[in-house]
Image (cartoon, rainbow, N blue to C red; front, side):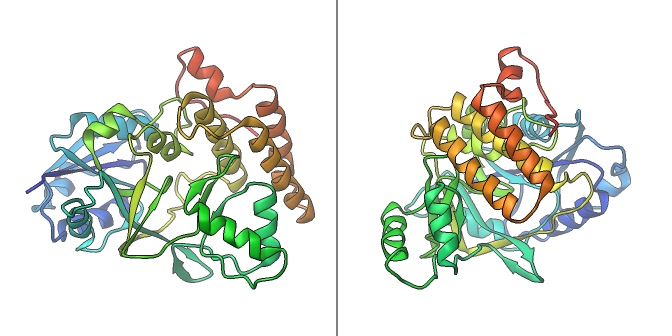
Length: 335
């Protein structure tokens, strides 16, 4: 039987962390160890850790950087397999067992996740279906992301676009954005997905580590990690899921998240061999599409962020790339 080490980076989310540990304690698949890498001040006491009698907990400290924390936990893990785990998810008891069953199946995936459910308008969802022909055409023209099934009506304009996406399957657009439109079957294969509740071979995570140049929140880190995997893909089970609670503590404003996520995309586009088809001109074109959308919504903060991104990326002034060349880590780019 395979052995699994759980690695949890955390920072001042004590209540959410305790809830997660209760989830893991009820796991129907036995866990070899749980490694908590804490960069916060509100920490678990030794007594609180020992109260989880069914878990072998290793509790270590780290500087404030999700990427550093993950890498530190992975490095000391004793198992061949790592359950990479965000601290604000809710894990059903049989979730990890389902991931293991997929690994033991003929597919032999070495990176597998269940659906990452997030709350939207009071409902837990894993995708954002495209029901508007206008949205479909806009995202197609500007090579933007799609994350849901295409359910808009056919007309002379949309029919060909729908066929295009059907033939392309799940892929990375020429601008670098994930296009995930095929969720069919017991599992689907995608070149990008959240690793916040995933089972991955330790050797893959060692060879394609979380990039410590990124900000302390690790915005965009999964893009770089998966791009460094030999198969550049994740298997996502439709039969397994976790709830992502989006804990507000230590969460950045949406504008800053967007700004840093695009910088991370551009950074990995420049340093990773895969996906090799992503070009700066297409990324800039997609940002023009986003800028026009933000202007139409009169979203001033996002307009400013988009204009700055066009300048920084267009003139090769990405702070992550510059920091990496100068061997600096944990950058905090400001809009």
